[in-house]
Length: 171
Image 1 (tube, rainbow, N blue to C red):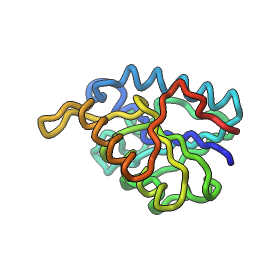
Image 2 (cartoon, rainbow, N blue to C red):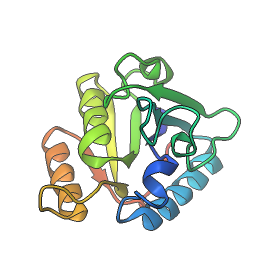
Image 3 (cartoon, one colour):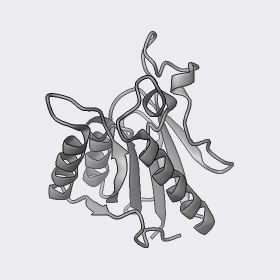
Image 4 (cartoon, rainbow, N blue to C red):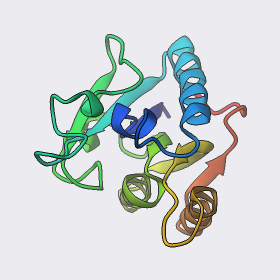
């Protein structure tokens, strides 16, 4: 079965100053390597882009709305207006039923979580790439703590958490 690298909301507003996530640099480097690997084996790549409301840093057309990693020919861009990338978007039409989804992106406790849970409900084999998702400090907890909590929650829901260096791509 085919594998798709699904990149959630890797946009400039969360990866560049002044509001970047704490592990922005590591996330950028890791995702760059994942993209190189996916492209080298011809795996499908889908970029999801959040569309914020007017006045927000990811409002369409603003610099913060732009994807950090520029898609190449043949890679889909899915625009969304809520947390779940499957809700009211064509994402489900781009992914073969029952296929494997490798997920990376932002924010772990919002859009990554919502999309991963939705993908599981829809019957996809979902694999979250450890270290390839991030969030902000919140509620007195560090981003790193929240990211670990999300990985635990998603494991409980049937998502596999995989290491970025493991043989994760199947074309």
